[in-house]
Image 1: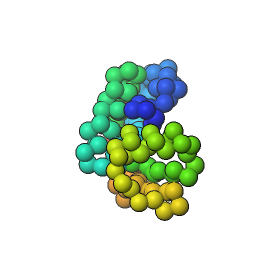
Image 2 (image 1 turned 90 degrees about the vertical axis):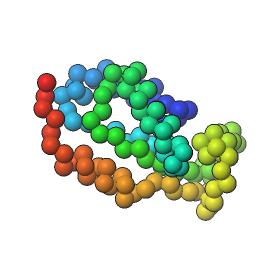
Image 3 (image 1 turned 45 degrees about the horizontal axis):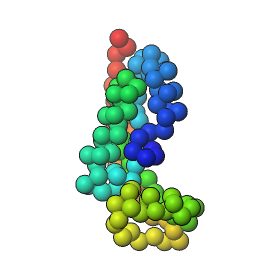
Image 4 (image 1 turned 120 degrees about the horizontal axis):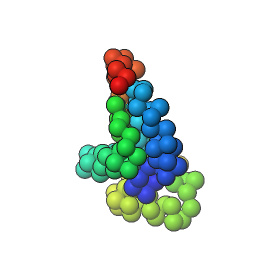
Length: 123
């Protein structure tokens, strides 16, 4: 996710394939640094809600995942956006320019719930 929304191409593809998507049970793993912090979860959830409204793609399952910061591979302006917007000015310890925020156990649980859920009847 970039700049507070999912990639435009992804949203266009989702809207274009809506009929096919509705015939399947779906899981969207939404990666956002906002999900790394309890006070950012509502905003990360809002990104999904807005995407669903724009595309009419109603998800069966959602996984809000924090992802990672890799400042060593960013340019100056990307670093500034990550620090001042995504991390909201938090002082985060980086090891060689990297900080992993993903809660892998939660992600594994979210994917397992999707994989073992009863299939949604096709309308």
